[in-house]
Length: 371
Ligand SMILES: Cc1ncc(COP(=O)(O)O)c(C=O)c1O
Image 1 (tube, rainbow, N blue to C red):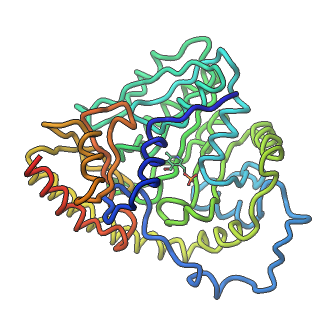
Image 2 (spheres, protein in one colour):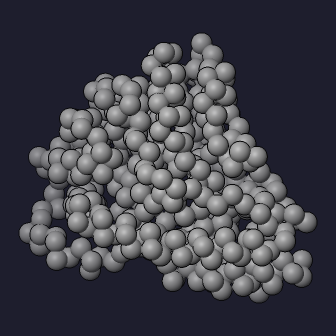
């Protein structure tokens, strides 16, 4: 298997190799806590040896993971991983073979396409339609299933549009997975900051074919901990993923697991999400006003999370992103070409004050006025 680089990662690599941006209007994660925020709850005698711990991850953390997803499943249905990215990776590697078909959404998180190509599986994309505010139509998913379809991979909330798959549609997708015996992986890495209605249920609770992936990276801003999970009712899926992981990083990092467990304690979690919500709601209001007032931009405001996709006229998203990254603007956003959509840009309001989002919007406005 040889993994080739995707446009999205290529662009990120390029941006980190050049002068660092001064402003960010593309961040997808909430303001990050500091280590000192966790010190009072960390045991100074905590051994940094892993010996004797569970290969599935800290039991207390696995319980928190189930609790935050509101799932009454056994602890052994959770495997702690190095972020949602590793959880997805382990699933693609263990559940897909060359010649299988994997069904995913477009636009969506590129990991499915990158891994399908590396494995020799065929990728089928079901379009999310901008005219329906990027909704995913379960009937379109049903029509795209063939006898070779082995997995459906979706994001809920969607990266990059922030659109939610509502509960009735999740139930319809779960019924499809049951009927055809197809794995239904739903990446919930952006869950926790819903602006429209309640957080939809986790797919792992709706069908034995459902696999939920997630992490503490986004709504809690703890990306650097590299701590995430997969949840599935099938012990074989969890075991297979654990066996593959044993041959790469072997085990999880002890400190990341302990800090994540503290971060997911109910009182902590409620407080952190409430702060992130307040900050993000105001920032999204501001971004929405900005886009409404800017004649060359339009969007469907995200239903959840901190990112959304805006249509741009008069230039391509990539020319805009590259020009805006260069001096004197030095402002980061993601071109829609990273998602196969050249006329779009992905905007985000995460990162807290350090992202200097307001200044970034001022620069974008000045740039668009003269471009
Ligand atoms: C949909 C999606 N899944 C997974 C990831 C990776 O997240 P983590 O930090 O949990 O590995 C990202 C990161 O941007 C993402 O957007």
